Image (cartoon, rainbow, N blue to C red; front, top):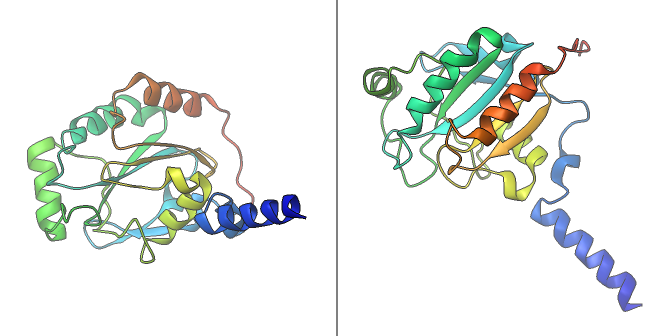
Length: 195
């Protein structure tokens, strides 16, 4: 009796904790089902980037990891012609480290780090108010793969599928991240079914 009950309780706890939360996403959902607002206020549907590998990174201008902007810009410049799109998602969720307006954020990124990859408007990436993309990616990644701090990275395949996540401490120029990006870029491009 206890054995069956323990299994049921464990399954319920894991489900509540988000370990099996991928089932919460709509079947067949991909990154292309989501849209952000760009830093200039225009719509930024991720479907605009169909056929590209996406590296989506929540950023913050006053974070101790802000130097990663350099590495992200280097990745963008090295791989954009092969199909990588780096997308920065400024967020004030962790430590209040992105307090500025969209204009201040855009100027900071451009002037201090030469950022030329796409940036979204300031966006919630955690908790109940998280952007729908981040809720989906968090479900796909599982509890441990959700952003815990700034500069958390999600890698999306050229077909819009969730591929992997990388913690804040993973440098954009790390061998691990670059190898994973190169493997994703090497995958044959697949046609997306129409929704």
